Amino acid sequence: MPKNNYIRDFLSQRDWRLKENANWNESFSKLQYYIASKELAKEFLRAVGRKARYAHSHGLIHIHNLESGGLIPYCTGHNLRKLLLDGMKTPTVFSLPPKHLSSAVDIMANWILMSQLEFAGAQAFNDVDTLLAPYVKIDRLSYKEVKQCIQKLVYNLNFTSRQAGQSPFSNVSLNCGVPKYLENEPVVIAGKDTGTTYADYLKEIHMIDKAFIEIMTEGDPLNRPFTFPLLTVNLTKSFDWNSEVAKGIAHNCAIRGSFYFMNYIGSGIPEDSIRSMCCRLTLDLSQLSGPRGLWNTAEGTGSLGVVTINFPRLGYESRKKDEKYFFDTLTERMELALEILQIRKSRILKYQSRLMPFSTMNGWNMRNYYLTIGVIGLNEMCLNMFDSPIIENVDFVEKVLKYMREFAKEKQQEMEQLINVEMIPGEGSSYRLAYIDRKECPDIKTLGTKKAPYYSALLIPPKYDVPIIDQIEISEKILPLFSGGTIFRVFLGEKQPETYSLLKFIERLSHTRIPYYDITTTYSVCLKEGKFFTGVHYKCPECGSECEVYSRVVGYYRPVKRWNIGKQQEFKDRKYYKLQ
Image 1 (tube, rainbow, N blue to C red):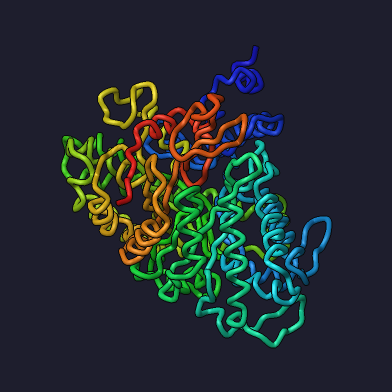
Image 2: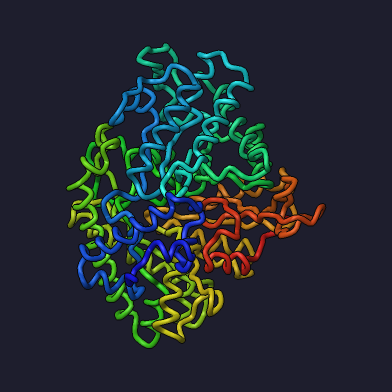
């Protein structure tokens, strides 16, 4: 019997990594993916060299998406306006620019389906409601017809069309209005100038917003949620908090928690930053980008790859040493991370015409893509280094992130390559790193249990019963220091809040410096009758049948029973916020 029998390991479910990603579904495709990913990971670990291989294997760092072999980029933001203007080329057929809303949503879904074969992570479309609105008016569609088109898009993005039986990881951003940079832009449909600008379509924008809200709130016929696309609302100073759209979003957040909020009001981030990357012909490498949402990647940009620093291990190693040791070691590991990412960049560049044919024939290039240094376990770093949690060590955490920013800024100019520092989602790495650390450093402090340890990918672990005001105050100091993705998450409790109260809470958060936040609900669906219940119910309160319990594992909703062991333990530990 071969030492590594991947088929046997898969069929016997011996490997915890089979549940590493809750988006995977049991299938023959998953078996094929599992076998291929093992070999691709081994090949890339050989390519990065002994030092990097040791650091990853022993948990000093975590190289993300090893299963892609370092041959394709991580995440990307697509230019929807360009797609609607130019159409889509594929290796087999060419699609002309759409003339109608029904064909526009089809080409969007097909673009995601094609592109997700060439990227390891999330796919994003921005300004979706604004850019689709003209088709509604030109086609003279009723609201029922608009909803049918958006429903078709949502269904197509949730079918398991990706390898390993996955749904494509997609994100859509909504403006709920017309952003300044599109107000006076001419609307061109299928090559014809309509003589209008996007500012002329506010009514139709709100029809599309309403359709997204209703579809995501309703779920499928069995009351299960639509996991994708993740929906991000761009909150600007012109956002109408008294509108029916705003009330609908808050109503959804009270029930399903489908929305994220990109804060352009209190954060100080310019409103046009979501598109500015793709519009600059030359980038100022002496400046870092500002923080952004974890999922709403700007069009024309993305990340070539991510390597995360294991901060709890670094804190453990530094516990009896001075700060110089900590920062010297951090520098070494960040430099190693960039070496690995440069190798990945070279491999992508070398093979992109063969391995990314769809993207390259549609004009993709890596000019505006980042090398991403990931951050995980800042709280557990403090526990190991100072024997106290992050809430008592905010000044030191600020110092760490400012140091990382300066490092990234210097390396950006030196390498002539965009670099960012991101608060990673950590679905698998949060457990993997804690598991390795428990084996190699038995007295290290992790969260969870001996059998199910984990590190927190959020700033303040959800197991801590910290007042929401204190969480906001700490997050306002730290989250804006990231130059990549961040998230502030509010876990709602067993009782469904009133829509008005939740809307006011969402509005209040928009006046903080927190860049990106969400409201996460937990709910249960009866597998027999499809009834929906707020909160955790493993048995149906009405008929006693089995229920599936849903919550966000990281950015998306999946049944808790499908999460990996570390994430399941984190779910058990969560404390919930009761909205007053």
